[in-house]
Amino acid sequence: MIVGNNVTIKNGCMLWEGVTIEDGVFIGPGVIFTNDKHPMSPRLEEAKERYTSKENWLIRTLVRKGASIGAGSIIIAGNSIGEFSLVGAGSVVTGLVPDKTVVCGNPARIMK
Image (cartoon, rainbow, N blue to C red; front, side):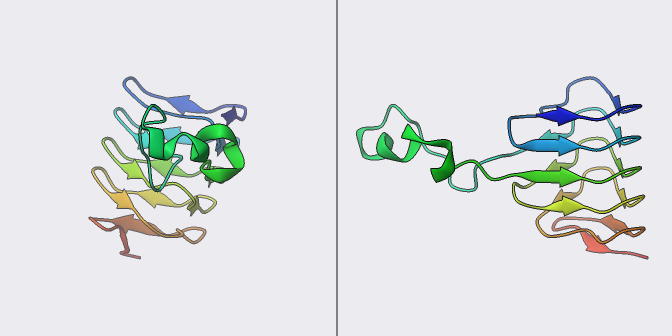
C-alpha cells in the first residue's frame, strides 16, 4: 500500500497491498479495497501454488489525485479512480472511473 501526502482516511477502512493512493484523496469511513479477484484460502491444497508468488494473484488499484470515496464503498481490485472524481457512499466500483466524474450505485455508474 502506498499513500500520498494530504490524504484523509477515515475510521474502519481496509487498504491492502497493491493499493496506491495519490495526494489529496479523501477516503470515507468503512471503505473497502480488494486486491485479489479470485480469493481462495492459501491453506487449501488446491490453491497453495497460486499463492507462492504475488504475481499470481495480486491485482493493483490506483486512486488518483484529489479523488473522494464515500462511506461504505467497495473498490474491486484492478480499477482506477480518476483525478478529482467522486464515488458516492455505498457504491461498488467494478470498472474504471474517469477523471472528474461522479459515480454511484452497485455497480457504480457515471452520474455526471
